[in-house]
Image (tube, rainbow, N blue to C red; front, side, top):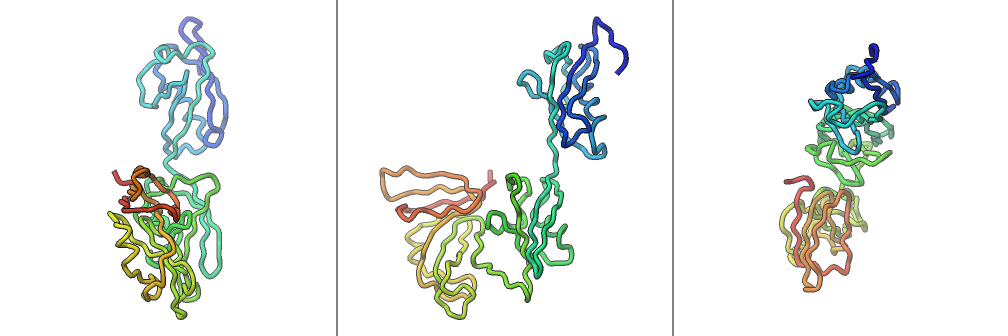
Length: 278
């Protein structure tokens, strides 16, 4: 850090995230007119994993500064004994996965946030075809194109990877898929979903509710016409619902799980879009 010049050098106290840095608090001495990048350089020296690239930000006085900033410490209001916080935004995330095959196992895997569900399948089950794997998140079967960063995972939230095989029969009819969903009752005694609610995925688009309910819906498992419709819902999407009642305004929402529409909703139509479409 060198000797301090009392006229131009200042002591700066930096608070660091102990998950990524060797120390949680360091003090460095820098010329007051030096660029803020000098503080980022000192922080990088303390990284636990120096080979990994992180996006760092500095917070001082409620302002957030990027590591590419050319402003000086003085311009940012950093003076003698100022305290700053350096945070890390990493492009990777650690996923907790429950693999349900013939023998259930748990796994922990690091993935870049810009990777897809297909990449996750390939990383965990290299020798298994993608079509033989189902990734469930909040009981929703995610498409292969879904980005990891779109999941908005909460702490300790688990992703389930189901492996389809002759010895591991999978009840695909009960899993929700993104978009508009009709739930019906299958009364085919030879069907795996006999006497249970089965999900008929309708995907994205504009849906006239009267037509959807009046049209005969087939069981996705056996193909037999469902005996009756028991519910409507949306999953992992954006939707705009229009009602018959004039006193009920149109409803627009984003759904990151499954939303079972209330029975008393007198729906006229619904427009359903992919959750992260522009």
